[in-house]
Length: 126
Image (cartoon, rainbow, N blue to C red; front, side):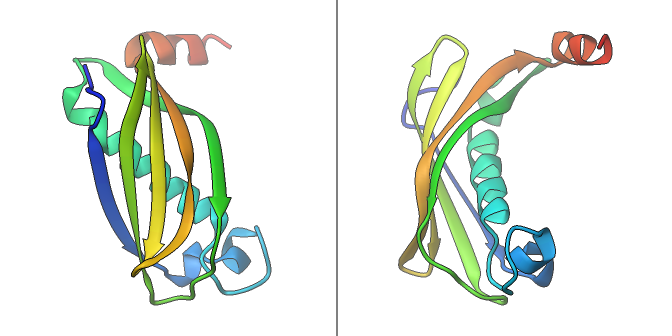
């Protein structure tokens, strides 16, 4: 089971396919909010993955995110996550993204621990 205080850290380079223009969330060649959110979710997910049991994974269920600053292609974005709350199978993370020392995004992200077999059986039965 994950523990409060678990931290994650991931980085990526802003490439053309991660821009608002390419992702359809805007018209400019700047880091897209959907790309930042995906990095935040991945950082949180991977941070707790080693502490999950067999046939367990987490799924994202809630995001409360602010995108505070733009950055262009070729720049490095680093995301940090910290598990701050556990309520049975619900996990709550503080997440933040930086371009160098500049905070470009922050917020809270919620994930639930699921049984992958049961989850996919339910999905496939629809």
